[in-house]
Length: 411
Image 1: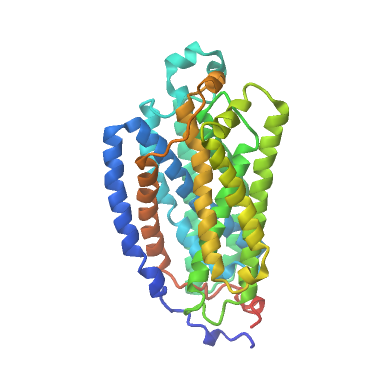
Image 2: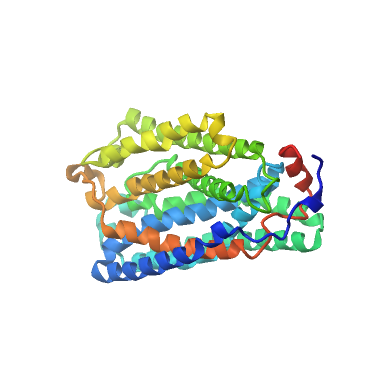
């Protein structure tokens, strides 16, 4: 079948099966928020520990979608055009993540989250004092403002110029989006690296790893890819995707999920092997706290569920070609991404901080706050996401690569 734009239902609304998810998401978000407020009143410090984990995951999906969107603009091709609106809807939630950071900001200002905010302890601790030039509250706040300013500005122009392209069909806008995406990827790499250092690695300021930010960035991209693929697969047999999206598109999506699953495994294993071979007292406690006291079972579940199972499943062509099985594969990987971040963050607070943390090994614990906070942020995030998705046509009609997207599917 040849390319024929008249055959596409450009103005088809978001399928009902997706729109129907909006109200349950809002209800879950509101109920979760109420319970989260109760948690904050009962134990603000414990609430912050759970909240940081929840924020990290959903912020990762948002940032990962922005990076994935810019990669698609730069590389072109038909593989990602059909999923572009799902990425843009996530990117337009960037302002929401800035608001969601406020409880963490309160934790920093009230000295409830990071030990380097305790000036008395910093003065008394030689190692913390050496890092005080970087790890101090005023500089932290300045970097925080810079991160979100950059992210929101980039999200704004990616969204605005895409909408203008839909309305006018001006081909110059496609070039502007590519020009924005090139330096944008470099800026995202830098800001995501330092935000990971500030918000996560500084939880244990005695410990450091050059691989740590990269692992989380790869995980963010994997989360965004799985979210995008699962949603597109869900809508694939309904207008406007029906008859347009083909098995080759899903094969590409599945291969992309497989590639980033392998990259996450490679970076994670590299960090472990470097730490294991070095056997340095300032590095090994991080893993000792995450391989003992019940946390070893979580680590084993990550090896199986975050790598072995997805790797084996995504190698199968019959899983990728129909598209629908990718809904379940994507949802499972997203769940394992949450487990991975929980394994990163939670043991920090149970074991204490410092070189002598090995004397107080963490023991696995899961509280109701660890469940409520991801549901609170996630429910509200998904509600705004689906609202964003319904504001524009699901197919970017005037994109100059649209013909290639058709041809990619065999049309």
